[in-house]
Image (cartoon, rainbow, N blue to C red; front, side):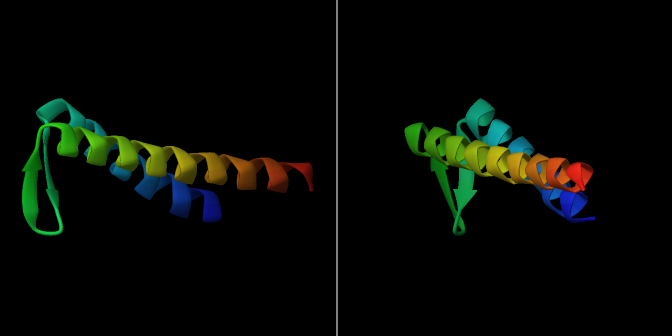
Length: 66
């Protein structure tokens, strides 16, 4: 259950990050940013998503060893 609760939102965060990079536009704290700031925000979102998915996999591996 913990894996799903981490991995599914991680996929959505990753999709949001990819969209921000692709469109070069993102809404951050209610303001629309474009260009390099949007790409930076997209990269941060991708990093956050990767961390969430990696932690979900780590939990899965730890449970599989038991």
